Image (cartoon, rainbow, N blue to C red):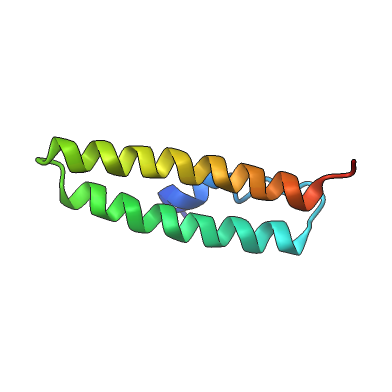
Length: 75
């Protein structure tokens, strides 16, 4: 089955430790990204809204990566 854009963006299938919390966080961020991407797709003709959606997706991906780092930090 094809993964959604959000699941691909967060790398849902990459979780070498099998940490359930990592999986749960990635799923939550994937859903947010999918919702923003749906808004983007519905507004293709509106350059400003598309730009804002693209930035929101980028920032959400960044937040997801930091959240996973926080979960897996061994410092």
